[in-house]
Amino acid sequence: MDKIEVEGGVQLHGEVRISGAKNAALPVMAASILSDGEHTISNIPHLRDIVTMGRLLSHLGLEVQLEHDRIKLQSDRIQSFEAPYDYVKTMRASVLVLGPLLARTGEAKVSLPGGCAIGARPTNLHTMGLEKLGAEVTLSDGYIHARAKRLNGATIYFDIPTVTGTENLMMAAVLAEGETVLENAACEPEIIDLANALISMGADIKGAGSSLITIRGVTGLKPMDYKIIPDRIETGTFLVAGAITNGTIKITDTNPDYVDAVINKLRETGAEITLGDKSLIVRGPDRPIAKDVKTLPYPGFPTDMQAQFMALMTIADGTSLITENIFENRFMHVAEMRRMGADINVEGSTAKVKGVRYLKGAPVMATDLRASASLVVAALAAQGTTVIDRVYHLDRGYEKIEEKLKTLGAKIRRIS
Image 1 (cartoon, rainbow, N blue to C red):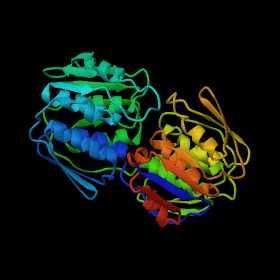
Image 2: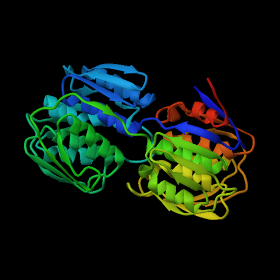
Image 3: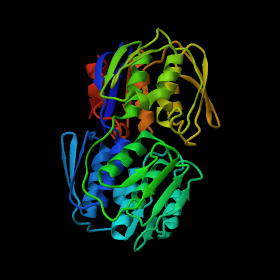
Image 4: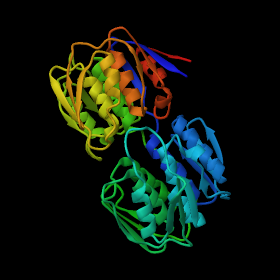
């Protein structure tokens, strides 16, 4: 099992390019089920989750060819409507084949998803929406089984905004008869990207990026040739890496609009951030100022940046309160940061972080994807050497992160 070793205390300087967004690429890949022909998706990041989704689509009958940052998907024939547990257990995004499979074949059987153990992420809103569209849905033996000769448009209200639920039902609705309205829909940039990919295939979608999305069903779609948006969480992670090391990093091939909440909060901590058209420059403070943060659905501060921001706060001047409002089990990195000398106390959904002058290198263990990134970020600023175990989590969401950090001057290496 791979580990990552970091010798901390090095200021980061230089330029880093942001990869395509994993959380945009996965639903767009799933959307290829909706139409026959050859689909081409570019700016694809080389990640374990992308490989997993490719294997799942191959199992369903698609021909999948990954070349550099481009993937080609031939979807002339769907051979199976079942996504087995072995393909779904490691990645929650596998549930995204549910909507397009049902829309194209009239039947879908998808194992309940796995992924990071950061809290409950139920699929009840997915199944509720499919039933509203006229599907017969059963849940048994760990599988969601949906059937419908053809889906019919409906108005669907989400009790809480759900990213994968919005994506799944948007894909199901594009081939439904009539109009579908999604109310209290998720507003993330990845939702907009999926909508734009579907529109390029001939779908009729309006309002993506707002809480009200309207989809008028069409009788058929064509293959897509589409480029994925840059990864906003990777962007945010490198912003924090520059801030925590008192470094200067230029971040390219990104979209500053996607990380507005992160930029504003980092500026409050004393970081200087300059915005370009598709780039950012971050200059870290001598010592960050402690600031409170609460995670919220987009456009609020993202839950996927909570752990990285906490790493910054561990060495801040003062005490900060970090409140997690999205997932109830997303403070598992706290125990590992304490091993590095952090002063953190958790009460319910809030972590009280009292900044220390410096962290110390230690052996630590990654518990989930973003916790992995936060431990790397913390290690960059720590005195001494940190060894991070279980970095397979990291490989699910960050493309060649140790190589990118090396180009910025970090003393980091992977131990196989």
